[in-house]
Image 1 (cartoon, helix red, strand yellow):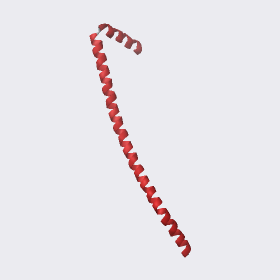
Image 2 (cartoon, rainbow, N blue to C red; image 1 turned 90 degrees about the horizontal axis):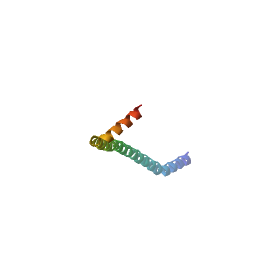
Image 3 (tube, helix red, strand yellow; image 1 turned 180 degrees about the vertical axis):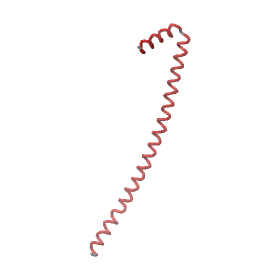
Image 4 (cartoon, one colour; image 1 turned 45 degrees about the horizontal axis):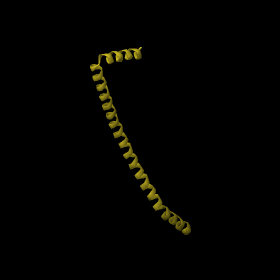
Length: 85
């Protein structure tokens, strides 16, 4: 039995550093995954705000253009009516 015990201990001693390294990599990957997920959530929120702001600015510009030009407003209303039909 002594030889099997020695072989078992030698194998365990050899594999322990590998197992520790694998566990460290696993923990690092878990932290990286959380970091990436958090960045993704923040990016989505900020992107929605950027898109909403840009859309509001385009709509405000269009509104001012239509208020300043009666012909353009009539054409716009006619196009909206066609698209709604």
